[in-house]
Amino acid sequence: MSQEKVDRYKEQKKNRKKIMAREKRNAVLRRIGAAAVCAALAVWVGVSIYQNASKTDETQEVSTKYYTVDTSALDDYLNTLSAD
Image 1 (cartoon, one colour):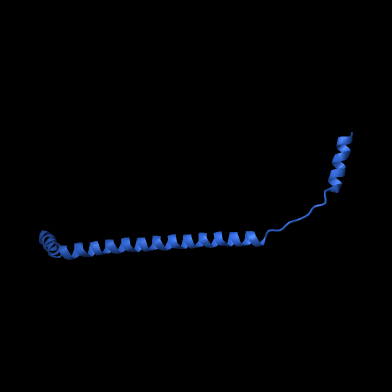
Image 2: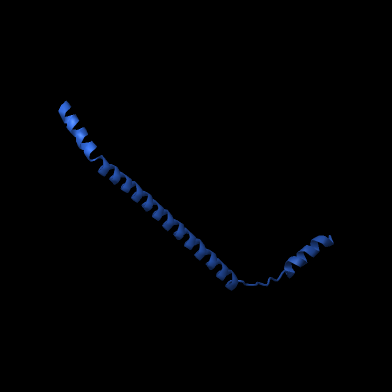
């Protein structure tokens, strides 16, 4: 059993540079992937906000409507209240 441990340790020591290089490469790739995902999300959110803002500006200009209301009945009612 002890000889197996010694052999395993020697094998790991012999391949330590390769193992460390692989771990560093994987860490860098994970960071690059995470940065790419974050950048894609930021761009997507920015484009969505821009599109919604530009839609709001266009619809506000087009949908400006004016209404007229006949308030003569309300005026008559208020005049009768103040006359008493």
